[in-house]
Image 1 (cartoon, rainbow, N blue to C red):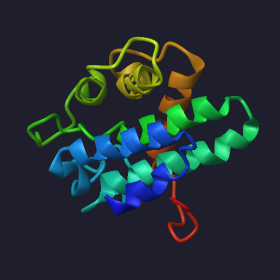
Image 2: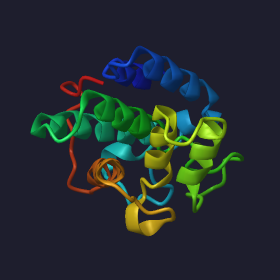
Image 3: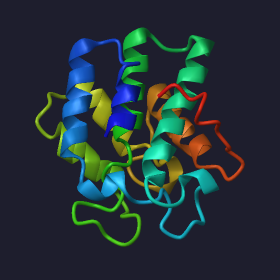
Image 4: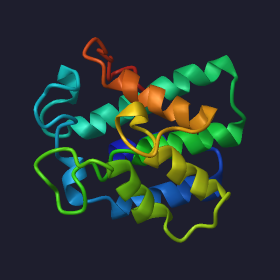
Length: 171
């Protein structure tokens, strides 16, 4: 938990940071232990083994932090993206901890964290980014630039050629 709690420090909005940390406490226990890919087929070596999914998540956040230098988003949109990336795969194996990635796992996480938030709110936007993070491989698909951005960061963090230096990743 501490590894991802370090990532929350990049969320400038105090309420959104606190909410994201609360959501992490609700994440299924398996999230903290499993590899990013149960077969090893879809993620690089660093994301394999115990804790691999958490390392994948850290890299996705780090990629977002680097891309924010392009100044495409407002500070609040950046916060929404970071929160969504931290939470995007927390329900990857569903609520019960299935052996493989569960289709619709983004929607499952959205329901876990955002079922009681009003449409159009900041948390609702985080939920939409979580739900659509798989891009063309699941439903719902991204429908705006921020949702596509979250998908892109996740996608880049899952490429076999991605080899981060964890000593330099500051989350």
